[in-house]
Image (cartoon, rainbow, N blue to C red; front, side, top):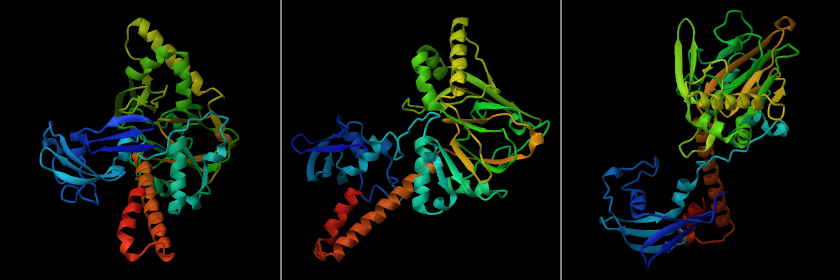
Length: 402
């Protein structure tokens, strides 16, 4: 939770913010672009009615009137004057954009943290809880999903929209000879990222177990964030190369030939590490000077060793009626090999984009805050804590707290 305090200085005609102890002056141009009146901003969509690119780059604040600790009327040199609710700026300082912080984990983590029952997800409160688990740990295990074909799509649609690929809206994972992917055979699959040859890569994968009659074929999950912390400590030079040198990934069959180049270690625009594009079955060593190539290969090799280490890799049996949902580039998945003669192992999988659960999470949180604020307002009114004449002022106060 961020602690934000605003300093409204009437004497110097300035506004600034202190976020978790760090001071940020708020420039006039930055404030001018964020005007909040209904003539310039649509209250429903939060979209502007004006073109901010046309603002005067030399605009200045000429008058500041403090209305409240977080409200002020600002007047600018271009003639605009309007009231600002400074609480609206909180999102600008939130690097997680409303989502919970990542919590990295190793194989000894309490696995009960990852589980949720499907019936729980059918309520808004339960869905909010499920998405929060996923955004925090990068994985969610959904229990008691009907072992029916297409059930994976029903679960996927709770969190976002299914992303169709050349494999279809969903894909069948069971042993069949001469398939176009090793996932559809019984061989072991080490920890990997799905489809690094696509742009963009699938953000989230869901795998739903319909049948599992084998003694092996264990599912594996590993949090790359924990692994990357260790790799950076052991080999900072190799880590840096994996962050900046693109690797070529390729998938082809009789109908399609997909090629994409991307770095193995992925980061967001702010430079925060978010995961990896890792698939030894599909990547090709980049052409570098020999010294750099040795460093790159050494780091890639160590990365693979850490991903398969019992310290980091969680192995478990995915039972019929269970569904695993994981962040495709953060939490790598795999499976141990199995003997198909023992019985049938049948999973169905689907993809959704990574932004969808976070978008639903923020919308559900906003709805929950609004409901709590309305309940609080109604309770105070019922208890006679304020008169009708004060209703408007109190409603504004509730809105600011929300």
